Length: 267
Image 1 (cartoon, helix red, strand yellow):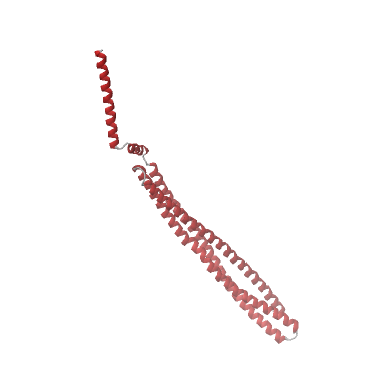
Image 2 (image 1 turned 135 degrees about the horizontal axis):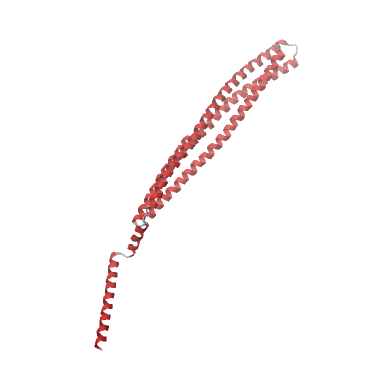
């Protein structure tokens, strides 16, 4: 192949590698941005879920405290209700831990993975810059010493060496990025699958627990509690005294009626 043709081919291949490297850079930057955003947002979601669990724990304690002040049937129903809410918070805690381990941590790990890919890109760019420098050097040598074949040949040899090195490193980068893309797709499927699974398990358990809590509240016997409450307003000793007063009142009334009847008869 003629030297000019060979040089032209080298230039074309170099530009193709430049485009490829630029595309890889954009892809890595895109993953870095969006994985970072996903990680930050989901970490916030997990923190809010944990705070919701904490508030619900306070609610459970308050229901228990209030139940201790109530009449037996209502007390029993409220305590069973609170126990079910406590179970729900245990499931919520498990949800927090699973999301942290199966979603947030895998997303966070991409920070280190992206750093490695940027190092690979840096090596590639260094090789490309060296190739571009040798290409420029050859062009200058041809302009300054067009008839000095030895100097031109040496510059061409340096360019060829730089081009081969750049091509080798670009090939390695392409293979590395291909593996990265393959792993990224696999990880995304797993991460989002875990999100769905964790949420489904929690909501299934929540439905089960909340159903039981609902039944505990529904099973509270209102009439029985009202009887207990009314009885508490009239304790036994008070009721006995009330019965005596009522009996005495009736006896006095009868005596008064009898006296009136006798007086009338005499008159």
